[in-house]
Length: 86
Image 1 (tube, one colour):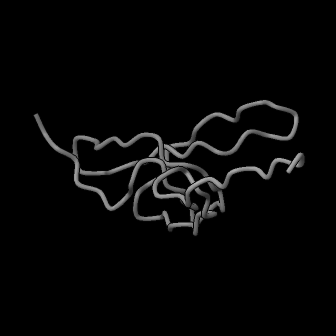
Image 2 (cartoon, rainbow, N blue to C red):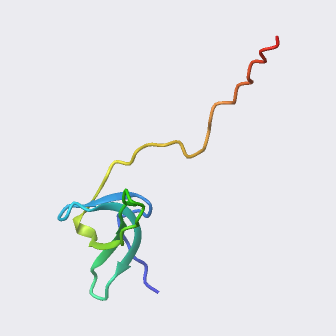
Image 3 (cartoon, one colour):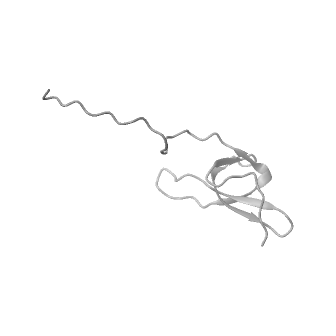
């Protein structure tokens, strides 16, 4: 069994510097002679269709700054709602 070493992380957003395609890294493959390619899954289109993933050479990818969203973790304690009858 061979392990694949890559600087690309699954679930992160990347851009192909040649075509400008942006997408989430969803797959990785290493060909017999050393070429490492990454599958980029673009976002869903406005009409709801899901574009097909594209396989891009690892060397032509650059990271895209992700939008920071709260996905859990430490949160402030909830505050009790004020009862209007008091």
